[in-house]
Length: 440
Image (tube, rainbow, N blue to C red; front, side, top):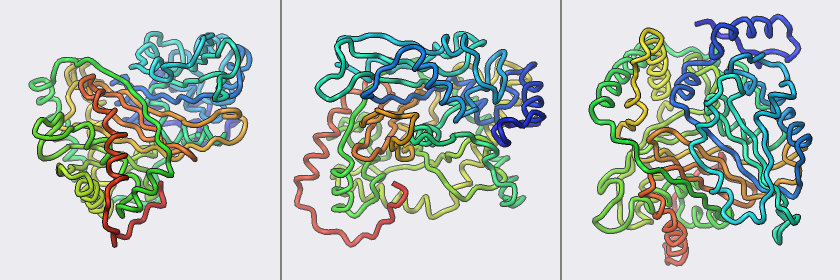
C-alpha cells in the first residue's frame, strides 16, 4: 500500500496535500501505517489531563484546539470527509469540544477516565475530543480554575506527541523510519516469518483462550519526582526500574496469594530509540519491548532484579521484537482486507500472557502558548482492550501514574505509597551499582 504523509512536507505543499486528499476520499484510513491500523481496529485510546489557572470559553477552547491541530497535523487524518493537513472548519471544532461548569474538582481526573469509545461513534468526525471543566466560583485554594482533557484514538497520538505539544512544539511525524539505515535481509526475513507465525498463533489461541470481558477500573497517582529520584539513587537502580518495581510489586500483592503470578510477571514496556532503521514503522516513534520480571518477596531484591533485566534487554538489539510486531500488524491488516472475520472479536481480548503493560512517556514540561496556565501534576494514559496498563508521565516536579486495568487490580494501587514509604524507611546498604539514567 502506497503511503502519503502530509506531515513529511511543508504544510502548504499543494501537490502532496492533493495526493493525500485523493487517497482518503475512498478510504479514510489510507494514510495509516499498519501499526496505526492495528490501534484503530482495536479502538485503543489515549488521554492527556491537566489542571489550569486559566479559564476557557467556547471560542478560547476552539482556538486552542485549532492551534493543537496546526502543531499535530495527523489529527486531521482518519475520518470521512477529512482533508489531511488542512485546518478544521468551525463546525468540526464545535463538534469535538465541550465545556462544563462544576462546583469543585473533587474526583478529577478519575471522573473523566474511561474507554473513550464515543470517539468512534461517528465516522464523519475527527478521532479526538477536547473537554474542559471550569470551577463555578473561580480558582480553588490550589489556584486551579479549570481542568482540560484531550482524548484521542491511539492511532493518531503517542506519548512523545503529548510531550511535544505540552512544550508548544511541532508534533508532526513525517516519515519516522530511516531509509538510510537498512536492516539486513536475514533479520528482515526472520522478523517477517516470526510475525506471520505469531499472527496465526495469536488468532488461534485467542479464539480458544480469550477470557470474557472483565469489569474495568481507572485510577491515578502523583508522586514527587525528587522523592523517587532519591530512592533510585539509594538503591543504585534506574528511575524507570523503580517505577516498574513499585507498580508490579504492589499490584501482584504480598504473601502466597499473588494477583498476577507467583514466579514471573510478564510485561511489555515502551521506550524511544534514536537508532531508527528502514523496517521501523513510518508513523510511531515508540518501540515495544517484552520483559519477564522474576518475582521476589523482598522489594529491594525485586527492584534490582528488574534493573538487571532491563539492562540485559536494552543491551541487545531492541529493534528485533518491534520488527516482528510490525510484521504481525501487516499480516493482520492483509487478512482483514480479505475477510472481516479475521482476526475476530475475541482476538482483542487476548493478552498473550502479558500481565501488565508499562508505558513511560517522555517528560512533560509546560512551555509556550499551548499550555499557558497549566500546572502539575500532568496525567497521561491509555486504554487497550483487555490490557492492564500503567502509564508513567514525568514532569518537572511530579511523576504521575495512570492505571487502566481490571477492576480487581485497582484496590492494590493504594499499596504503592505504602511500599514507597516502607522502602524509604529501610536501612539499605549503599550500592556500588553504576546506572545511566539520562533518558528519564
